[in-house]
Image (cartoon, rainbow, N blue to C red; front, side, top):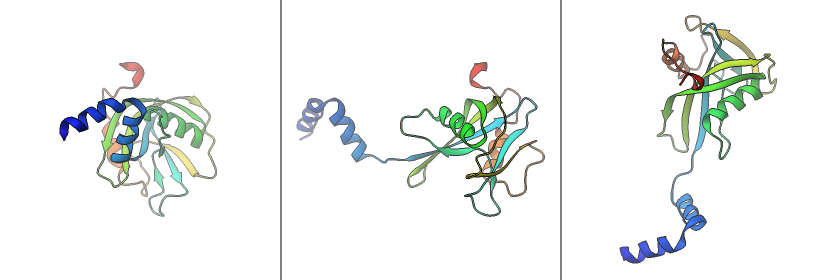
Length: 159
């Protein structure tokens, strides 16, 4: 039976194999977060309209589009929400175990642009030092900020 299954698998090749794998395995949404810093080491935080009251401040976040490299998701989301240009760097967080979601976070550096908010999703934005974060910051974002607030943090261009 195993040999027959192996022969059938090898005979299908390409798109059919991928379709079978896609149907047989879990499909996840990928939430991507960016710890965006400026040259002074301050962190970009956004006050999100759709997030729960009392936890609306947080890092720029969004979902990856199918086929999108996750570092590019950070760059796209920040641009959409703030009109700022950033460059994604080191992967600093990867967590699975949720039912249909995977969480990813990258360090990112401000490279340009002028802050202009997307008024639908974002209520406010600001640059904060790691020692002066808003009280109603998403609890899961505090360790991400602390994790990248260290000597030797690299961005993609420094490697």
